[in-house]
Image (cartoon, rainbow, N blue to C red; front, top):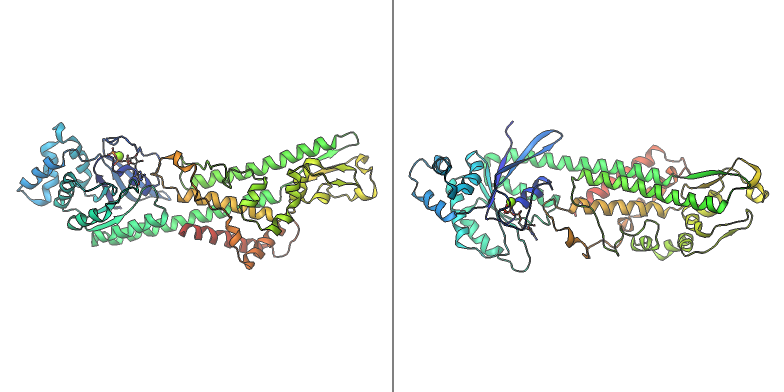
Length: 466
Ligand SMILES: Nc1nc2c(ncn2[C@@H]2O[C@H](COP(=O)(O)OP(=O)(O)OP(=O)(O)O)[C@@H](O)[C@H]2O)c(=O)[nH]1
Ligand SMILES: [Mg+2]
């Protein structure tokens, strides 16, 4: 089957490779500050479920546009043959090597996407390039991909573009998200009526694929939430056991494992959105860089004072408060932290209510110290919000953007979790889910799970549209 094909052309170092990288979600394409990075034309095909959908060809920049234009203008053969004849005439001439290379895909029938940096003024060379592209007679679109915000010549560029192109669009390869990629494809439809149906199918395929990814994220998130919220650790103790030590070890294991579950989920999300280079290395103050169990995490996620009070035990715990469960004669010390998450008293003593009646019961054999599953409903929101924030980073990071350093110090991090905006109905769904997965209620069952699934998926779809 024929798929639409576009050659991405322009001056050296204007962001052609970066545009191809963002459009194809391929972060393995080389992008460089030094002009002349791309020296041969290379095809990048987008595949969805194994099917080829659309192809973009990355090309080297124009080197001798004025000389090329002079040849084009002097050409008096069949205009349909113009590009082919140019390549025939110059393929062995090193002076025109880049021009032959970049015009190759155009001769092969590709549509044209012309990229310029809107933060610099229009020059004569650019006018020559645009005129060359017009003379090819191929369907063509121009995009302004501004490399800096310092100066903006977008309107000058647009004025020139109007004379030479069938469609014009501002598209920034360093900020464009899914919605902008789709809009870009929508405007590509305008460059040639014959291409419209094909491009409509491409857009449909992209949209379907995105929804599919969101469904996969939903499944992964729910699996991780279930695993984390129902998680517990336990150990058999005897009279001679060092309980404090055991509890401390259980505490560590509990936290470490839950963090591991989260890490695995993050890695799946990252893979789904095809990031190899980008990972979230957040600045100090950000939510995700905080320890999952730290006070800051809870605060930054936007929990109210009341909610924080409800989790007081956790914070108290990390502050070193000591709760004495007099009956059992065990002081909790550090594990108050867990006390809050797990619900101090009962969770520590699986099954047997021996503590109250037999203060010495721990020594009777077959007794267990158990941490988890969590009793704290807020923990669900914490885990959810962290997943959603991570997801939002992954989906909003264009693959053509390579300045990893710039990310640190950025302040556009959402200070509160998405769950803070949940409606009462949504909170109820979360509460039921929580009760079900922590084994505290069997009410609802299937419906509880499908309601929660629907909720997560709709939140993901909403974040995708932002
Ligand atoms: N800030 C910012 N930088 C960009 C943007 N697009 C490209 N760049 C940077 O501009 C430089 C050139 O980008 P490339 O995509 O390699 O440009 P190119 O047109 O393929 O260059 P050649 O292959 O050398 O012709 C790189 O340092 C990019 O990171 C953008 O939208 N914003
Ligand atoms: Mg390049």
